[in-house]
Length: 273
Picture 1 (cartoon, rainbow, N blue to C red):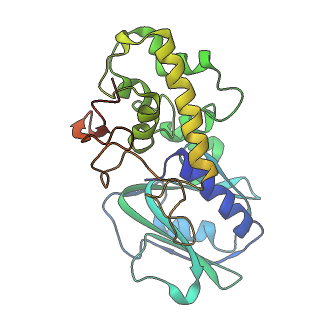
Picture 2 (spheres, rainbow, N blue to C red):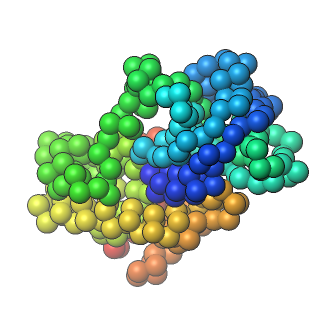
């Protein structure tokens, strides 16, 4: 799943590799996927991208955005793998393939579900609410993301719901999803099902610092080891709270793994309260 750290790392990689590269071939939905959503018809996407030159690649929250000189852009988001490789290594199955003028290509493969969109930022923002929220969101790693801003967007001042609801639902912090949340809460020593009303001011400050420090660590390590980068290698950040781990890295007690709010929560019942 592409979350905020991976989007930042992928954008940096892709911008270095693809800025100034011309797209000379496009294949859309070679392998149809029922949970791959396009905002334009495959034929239109092909015609729109062919012979376009990428001027920049950037990220907004968990959206990866490929920009073109005419004001249009291609974006992808959610659960996709993206691989940059020589054209001779093209896979049999992919949902989008872009071939460039240097004999290399990008392959996009949707896993569980994913979005692929094209258009001007203005039109995309009008038609796609999640896109609009992502590009308008304040980056948690920017100076503008103050403690007061954090409390406001997460609604921690309203004393309702759980910690997971506050941090990782309803796009309160776009790009901060269930995967990233597990390590943030472990570092803050706070349980995901804990009620917001029980938090002290000190707890909220710890959460704020954990969000910034955990995201910063993930980005500086080139993303989490649960997601592969453009060259097919995993990120360098060692994810602490994951399905692959069964004991707490701090106290070595058993982890709790359970379904909650449409996803899974993983936490240590001893270290996180």
